[in-house]
Amino acid sequence: MTVKSTLSAVGVLGVAMLLLFRIAVHSKGVADMPRFLELVALQSVIYLVVAWLSLRSSDSRSILVLGLVFAALFRLSILFFPTYLSDDIYRYIWDGRVQAAGVNPYRYIPAEEPLAQLRDDKIYPYINRRESVRTIYPPVAQATFLLVTRVSESVTWMKAAMVGFEAIAIWAMVQLLSSFGFARQRVLIYAWHPLVVWEFAGSGHADALAIAFIALALLARRKEAETLTGVLLAFATCVKLFPIVLFPALYIRRSWKMPLAFVATLVIAYLPYLSVGPMRVLGSLPDYSSEQGLLTGRQYFLLALARQGLNANVPTWAYFVFVAAVLGGLALWMMWERRGDDTRYLRNALLIASIFMVFQAPHFSWYFTWLIPFLCFIPSVPIFYLSLANFVLYLTWLNDTPNRVLIYKALIFGPFLVLGFSIHRLHRLHRSNEQSV
Image (cartoon, rainbow, N blue to C red):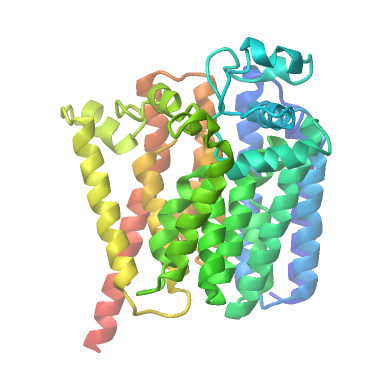
């Protein structure tokens, strides 16, 4: 397609996508969830067409600008509406308010008496589990909550801040795309993705901050700025914890700068909050692990499938050993492997991140958002599927029995694994045929 025809297509698809956002944003409660998911399915089709166009067209500033204008409009169209898919943002604002009052956010449960003077009727009543758990968010997230809420303690402002962090991530991705000689409009693969728009502009999830640091770390790695790479990856880890698995992919063999910077940044980030003790600084993570079935193994799709689908009595500790062996072996291979082109570290990062997500099999859709930036550089059909199919998890609003959740996760991870294995086999067969010629 020519640039002119691609521009026309992006314009038409952008208007259609924007209209769907404006319709879906009025969804309320459990009863509207099926209709909301139907609208998201239509958005996903439009998104895939735009992703295909961005991959097939040559580098074009006009396509990039038009695409980013629509991406901004998508976010603005839902930014000022109440959150629908999650209420986590109220905890963010509360944590910022608590810190502004000079209190360590890991010290008290919101309902405890020492924080009574901070309660109001706009934020406090909507904090999830306010009477039972302390905050779970790591220190860089906490510092961000404090800074953002010093401007305004409103839901809209917190969402706007997360969209601002997205803008930083998009800038870094454009720079990285340009450095590899890829078409810059491939960033629309991220910017138009329905999941990131709904979860960040719609719900204000802090994952946007983690993605910003991940994108900056990938750019720093490209520039061989080892110390900065370690610092930025540590920042991302101190927002969401998951990004720590990217360490072996970004590590440069026999380098000490990146590991030292990573560890030092982690220690420094936690120091201001250690007044509660080294264990309590983990916040509600132990309680969360118990509630979500991380300790019993209930959350893990592969383990649940073995236990329920195959009727195998697999202990949780055995699953942990298996996961540690796979991820550990993969990490060692990545840290010592030196073959491949300049994008090798991006491929390795996507590989270990996606495998980790299969092992983890989280219950919440926004946990998958950090995989999406990699699609701009490594357009993987299985990851495209995984990033869109996880909207199915919102069906747990209608039915969250263990068997039903297993079915939902089977719909997400089953096709993903089949696609991944099939494409891997085809690539190996293709390489084998080339070598035999």
